[in-house]
Image (cartoon, rainbow, N blue to C red; front, side, top):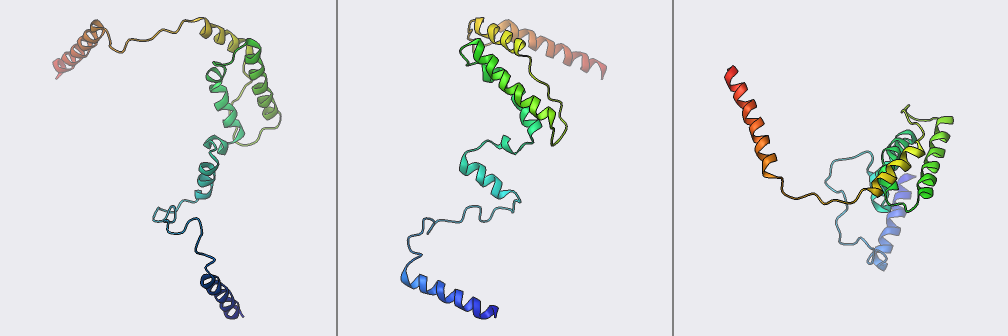
Length: 161
């Protein structure tokens, strides 16, 4: 029975080839992507993330995603124009954290709500601070003093031996 089914499928494929239905396929003449690479069990996840241009953070459990977002709060609020927008951002993040704390899933990672007043205080301090460009070249005295400490360390070590 399977031989008859395979023969029917082969006959349909051969008929399609003769009619030219496979001539204008988009990947024709191109190498198969990933051919010759070692087998990876999560190849389809990686290809999906690459194809859809999604960040790999989406693969993390919710607790780790929230922890990472808490760590990135200063960078994310830096460009916000008003204090109220900073408080709104922190409020949305805290709502997500509280929702996760009520019904935690995944690994137990310590995640606490963010203190909005502290974030606003840092945001104000950063906005008030004038941007200073750092010189590209170190002062000569700093270089010489660092060489002296290295040399003295080396001499102390050498005297022991």
